[in-house]
Length: 182
Image (tube, rainbow, N blue to C red):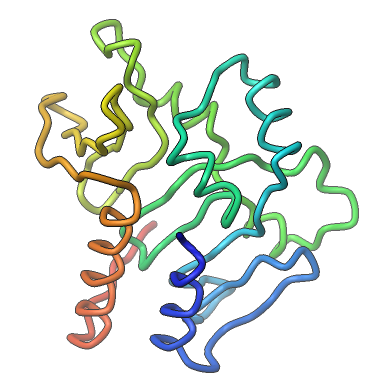
């Protein structure tokens, strides 16, 4: 379901990519050890089950399917989908450590509020858009404004949601639009 995203990113960035020993792939070198997009290595079913046990939380089916293809990603400076960081950084270079996924539990703690419905599974955010993303009980992806906590947009499934970001990122690249972070 999500395998084509790596093919699409390879087409967009061409040879401008780097594969780590961990098999994570970075795309679009922006200089000073900064990359535009990153896809993490997939999880096995056993690893997903253990990850759920570790967090004491059952993941929505769409997120599990995503993890079986990518343990998190970072797309075009627009979208960060959380995953599981390695249990240890032993033996990883600084660049490899920086290329690990943003931790899911940290993502959820960042955006969880008293009035957040228990059925909202927080899994991604966009610093550029000042939004975060949840999977609701109907398996829809909801885009939520960080400040107002109002739903801005809804997507029928995770694949469509990611496709939208790839389309926007590709358009930004074609127009020379990049975001600077300090």
